[in-house]
View 1 (cartoon, rainbow, N blue to C red):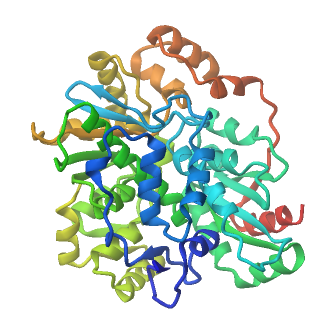
View 2: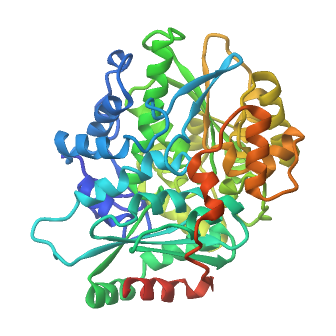
Length: 494
């Protein structure tokens, strides 16, 4: 049986259901499986399969203690009519390259791919003979998109509640309204005074607070779990869309079975691109994975220098969901590239916690660089890329996708290797920045900017985003970082 343990020790031996329910290991590490890659997905059978069929094949390899029927039910519920495109993640040509649209779900961001299915996974993790009154409190910090996608997935889901923290003033107007207008009796949303890294670090501390855990279990039958990509159940659904992209390239006869593909991925927390590495371990012919960063280019510096240093200026950029200095999922990649050395990973993460930096051993770094490329875009380059993509391809991209677009254009092209850019959000989530970049009127509200963008480009704003203008705001709480624990305590008692 496949088991999961922490990146920092091998004392745990959990099933995938237990790992999903727990979220994060007791020692602060992330759950990994040493059998990842032992079995491969049959890529020769991909062409012609639906997204749902591909998901069944891939998730069966990654979550082996879910029955085929359980997975089929989760997949059916997660990838249905709430998606605006039946392909779920359609592949579109842009010039000589391709763009994989990951934003056709209910909240118009790539997080929907995972957060539509995670609550379904959670509902099937209740242990036999467990506390029937037990409630899972999903606790998450967001840099913009995870929050709404998690809220949409968990709202009114039986046996769960959800509390989301976001950095005050550091998400877009649309992102904030998506969260603060969320309906559901089991949801809580709160702004915090600080940046995303501050909020994420506080959430990790709350998870590690055994006294609080005992108190919540005793008073309100509540256990905490995570919807961030630190949760393995949030990470593995993202592996599916790499296989779905490959299937569509096969169908378009761009490639033959076994041909390699390069993926460029805008990422801050590293989960989106780590899923591509997992896909490679499952047998997908991935030639390179290119990390695209914004001005907060801590990942670029790590991949080029070997030193990860979070003690640096934090920039609030026009790609706010990537404004991250502590990239949580990097720890999983380091584990696999260290030949599964938990003591080394524990040491590196301790260095990061204590000193704000760590240095990767040279052999590990050499191995990482053989697969991962990197680049970053500043604010002007992001705006120029939005305009360039529109002028060349008549395709509108958001500022996060634009980071990837810029980096991809800088990379040397191998004419025999197709390049796929992952598009992480609808441009209508950031209409003001997009309009400014395209030379359109950006003086009105975000909703007026949406209308200008739609009229000028012949595209349409997703109804759920446009409807936010008249939605009732339910949440206006703002707390200091050190008050987050008390907010969680009171939310659990509701």
